[in-house]
Length: 140
Image (cartoon, rainbow, N blue to C red; front, side, top):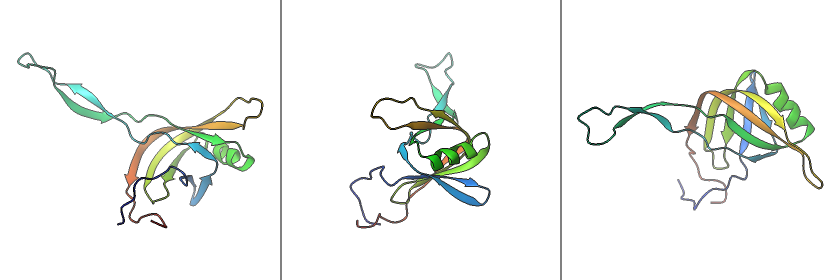
C-alpha cells in the first residue's frame, strides 16, 4: 500500500440500506467522530496505593451529521427516520465505518444569505465498526 500524507474528509459518502438497496445521502457537510471511550470500572480496594480501573463496555454516542438541504436528500433522510437501518460511512481511500441505528432529523434555522441545512441524528444500536482501506486513493 502506498503511503499518503493524510486524508481530507472531502469525498466521504454516507449511505444506508433500504431493504436491499443502498441509498446515498448527498450534501453531508460534517461528520462526527466514530467510536467512543469505554466506561471505567473502579476496582480500587483498601490495599491500593492509588485508584485502579479496568475497561468496561463502550457507550455509543449519537452520531450527528450536518447536511445541506436538498429535496431528495431530505426525503431520503425522512424515509430512513424512525426505523433501524444499517449505515455506512466511506472515506475517499476506502476506509469505512458500518453502524446500525435509528435516525431522526432536526431542520436548521435560516438566515439571510445562508444555506438551509438539517442535522441527521443516528441513535446507534450497533457499531460503528471500522474496515481499514485496502488501497491508496487514486493519484497517490
